[in-house]
Image 1 (cartoon, rainbow, N blue to C red):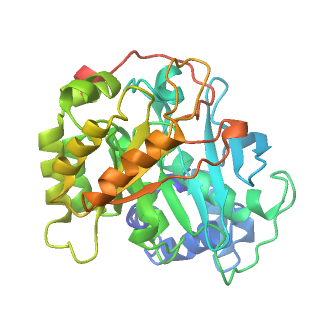
Image 2 (cartoon, rainbow, N blue to C red):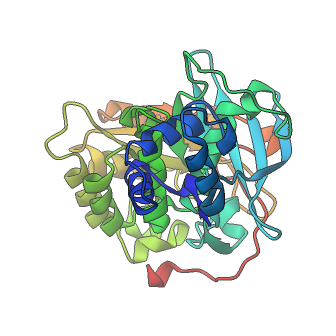
Length: 366
């Protein structure tokens, strides 16, 4: 049996050809699942009865179960999704006046052991499938944010306007170490027969897996963010251990290559978590200016969000402002990210979920 959520339009067309059906059935089923939110083959009324019966015999559509919903005082939503008996992941929705941003997970835990991240402290079990990744968007779009209970009978209604306007691959896990499944999921997000999101509205955040960055540009060039967090290799080696394998200089070169020929419409976002007494010194800000001054870049300064297993503290607001001003004076577009969902542990770096840790740190194997 095949989960149709695991398939982008190309794979779905091949699937229908293999079962003796015309490839155009792929677009019909894509619309039913992703635009109308229909999971029951019997409700797909423009498919013949014989095809519906055939689909029930060889395929299914599986959505993770929502086992916990938390709502922050600032309006941020966090959901815990059960994938199997031993593992669950979290996703976050940040509603704003003109947009709704969904933060999606790509792995059960994370193997990269970044020192300031709660997800890394949970260990790592497995990659999410394409279906488990895209199901997060399906749930947010069709069920959760509409106020429906997942167990209620669902009646499809064509939407004139989407609920989710932006997707960030910034939840649990490192997206580029689950490359194939993440790429297929993002292609579904981009597909006009599914969610029809612009590449500008999908952002993939990575610590910097250089070979995968090069592939990303060729296979699915969405908006791009680097979790940098340090202006030099000595410090970044400690905070982001994968830097020992993919250090800053070749990482910045890969960023230049990613936007080569497209500077008029693309920039790289650099995320920099502010850690008291660790990476917030004015001299480090000046190093960052020197590092990024020739690259179309936007810097997101992220106040560190505390979690129980961390000894780090957030830089003071004065220190963050001083750091930001040095970057601005150096010609770098810089903003301090507003913390959202901190009271429900939904802020950046706080997602944990439930993980059966089967593997230790994989930094040296990537």
